[in-house]
Every structure is written in C-alpha cells, then in structure tokens.
Length: 78
Image (cartoon, rainbow, N blue to C red; front, side, top):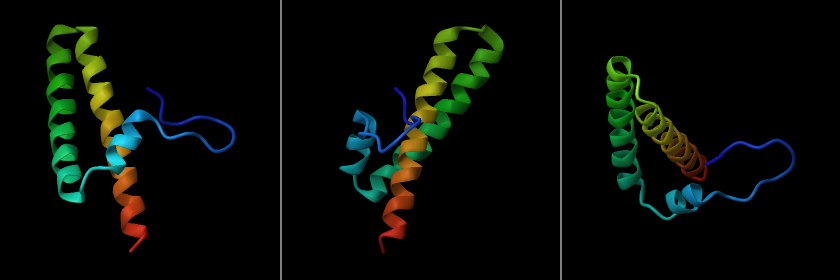
C-alpha cells in the first residue's frame, strides 16, 4: 500500500477511505495500538530477523501515518 505518490492529486487509498469513516476516539485507540504493534514487531525482529515481522511493523506504520494525517485534517477543520 502506498500513501505517497509523485505528481498531481492522488486518489485516496483504501486505508485512507477507511480512516475517514472512523470516529476520532476510535482513531486514537487505533493509533495507540499501531504504536504497540510497531514496537513489538521491531523488537521481535531484532531477535528473529523474520521479514514477516518487518512487514507487520511497516503496515502498522502506514496505518499510523494515515491516522495522524486524518486527525490533523480534522483538527484544522475546526
């Protein structure tokens, strides 16, 4: 899943569309969970060097980015 692209305006990703529909309280909970998952998977990766753990950490980081971008957008809309 790619959030950033070069060039003109981009279409929202599936993740961005999903994030837009979720309430702020639930987004914050999701962000907190993503932080935990990222940390857990990175810690496990340092022990096991399993690429799947890095993939999980990466997906968590993408979710966290989409969530924080949505929260910033909502905050500026006030």
